[in-house]
Length: 321
Image (cartoon, rainbow, N blue to C red; front, side):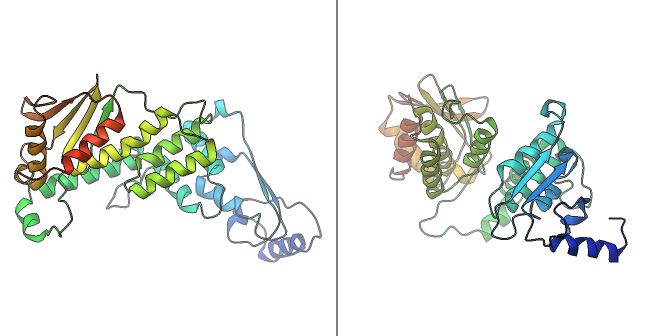
């Protein structure tokens, strides 16, 4: 990077013309230099580079029909910081074509997004992580919309025919069941964590089906505890449609916690009528509770996530009272 422009240009031209086989350079080569005949890059002390830098440097090879290789030289992993290990794992995991967006999101999660509306690029988000910060921000917006600006929201919002009004932005699931991808099924820890994260971000049924198909294609038949984990995504979506803030699956019971009591719109909504209808039809299995102002329903004989999903689907199919 300290060479005179003429010498720098000549060095690149000579290397491109096969005058020599090895080019030693600084990170200046990441700045859009196209060398289609190169097929190997060795990055020394890769732990000191940012994730975007590693991605750009890796992109200098494999720019034609030649198979390319990128070698990252680092000290032993146990001597590296947590962030450095995460950067190296990310650059190793996202190696396919078009993975730039995934690397950018991973980089954002590692470094933090900083102040949302300002130029500051540090602060408490560095400790929280991008996804947690995004979740807190979404909850704060929903709280303002449903409490302080309820009148404005009611005037401007229109629920189209066939659509359900939403009352909660997220639903927490707690369980004493074994819900996971076993080590024997997915041995690689980082890959397993990445799949957990991918599953947690899903909302559409088509995405869940595609995810299951991908798992079976890569790792074989999904074990029972893995199938139950995947069903948690469907359970959470159904619970959100019913206006439940929390679902607890423990001791063969399912406890559904209603949206906060100050949300008057919910208790006047058609979806709450469906819940009441189910309660009236199943008095022996269901029990309505209120503890410290928090209302919930306890439903017995729920031994699996699959049974919990079928129960919530049954509630949504009820006729309104």
